[in-house]
Length: 45
Ligand SMILES: Cc1cc2nc3c(=O)[nH]c(=O)nc-3n(C[C@H](O)[C@H](O)[C@H](O)COP(=O)(O)OP(=O)(O)OC[C@H]3O[C@@H](n4cnc5c(N)ncnc54)[C@H](O)[C@@H]3O)c2cc1C
Image 1: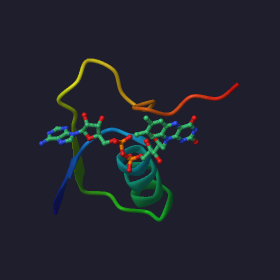
Image 2 (image 1 turned 45 degrees about the horizontal axis):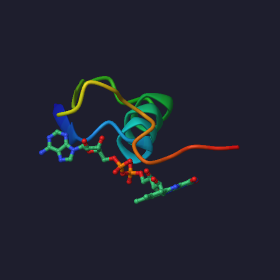
Image 3 (image 1 turned 180 degrees about the vertical axis):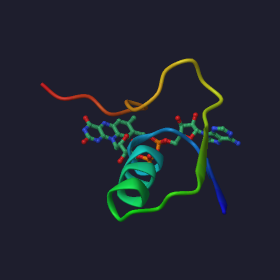
Image 4 (image 1 turned 120 degrees about the vertical axis):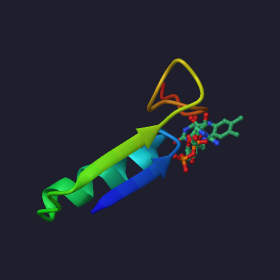
């Protein structure tokens, strides 16, 4: 089985992480249109 996740913000990354953590053994394709992943508008001080 293949899973496609569009967007590598925190939600997309968390989704991929949880799929693997729960034992998903299929292919996970994570697509991101920007150069950076993960942070988006998220920042912390
Ligand atoms: C101005 C602003 C300031 C914020 N400041 C804070 C803060 O200080 N602290 C905090 O905790 N939260 C903050 N937030 C909220 C935080 O950014 C969001 O809660 C969080 O980023 C949501 O994560 P997400 O993965 O759902 O969406 P996003 O982070 O938006 O990730 C979605 C990703 O999908 C990608 N994408 C979209 N369409 C496609 C496509 N068709 N193909 C490929 N990739 C695609 C986008 O490029 C993006 O990287 C802020 C939000 C905004 C708008």
